[in-house]
Image (tube, rainbow, N blue to C red; front, side, top):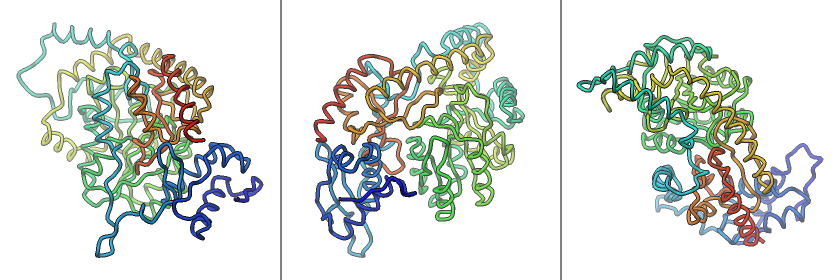
Length: 473
């Protein structure tokens, strides 16, 4: 039995990880040995179940344990190691099924499920549909230009409005420093293809955006995760990664990040900029949830004045995901390559869509819509947070804003298994391993608060937790 001491400066999680690792290395715990269940270990050692969950999860990630669905945790056997090529090199096994490609396929194939707490958009009645319809009617009356393409940078009037709104966020730019894109996904793709070459090491948030990870790997990059915390980043881990890998670019979402909805503190933003300067690293700031933030706070772009930052935004979350209107902002000397690549890969973005978006953001009700949306999301956060807490979930962070809550339950060891069970019941969940840089079984789940207020969801979750608890005993 491990000897744990809460009086030591070493965290209990670390004590458990180090202790079990030592016992496995010394063959006290032999390969194939089943460890006590999470609840049994917690009761025997007088620690919380969440402490044991975190310790077991780290040991799985480090390769000391394996998690088997409905069976528990076992010491890893030699046969569980990756196969070895005759040359002596390790042969990489195929990645788990849950990757970005699986996620994109499932998220759209299952969008018609009755309940969608795992999705990444807002309900239609939370969006700015009335303004979109008014803008479309006005465009029809004015007679849209259908016989040509838009401008390479995008619709000028919308870029001028954007430049004015960015000034309110302390990002001083001219309209010619803004490039409109087919959603923020195209903006990320343009930046990745312009500044990342095969073999480059790039950093991303971990957990983070699965489509971005797939995009970067497709480009031949080595993707390394920077652990997120409730305050922003694990700065100690970040500094070690910078020294070890010398990455070229860090793609990050400081504000209301998906899936954790954490926001980097001002101190973290300043330190990140210092480290980027010290290690000559480009920062790509994906700020697509800025309009959902009720607090006026600085961004990397505002603090850095775009010297080392490329800034991305989108209207898809607050107006309509079908409009697919995004944008990127950068210094002029970086824009030429981005605009040229935009033209080569897809000519211009849609002038019609950008005109509709312009009509929406210049609608007299635009600011009122944003305030109402923020208030509604805040109320949903409080309601869903209470429901999760009542079922015994641990919340990673309680932001009170944005779209998501990131949570785990001590009896849910593999949220992907739970998600498959939920899909059979007509519920789309967001299993945590989809968002990890190195996918592995985890209990974390992403809840979209706007879609998580239906009592049927919580009836299912209560029943599922009880079933998983029985399996783990």
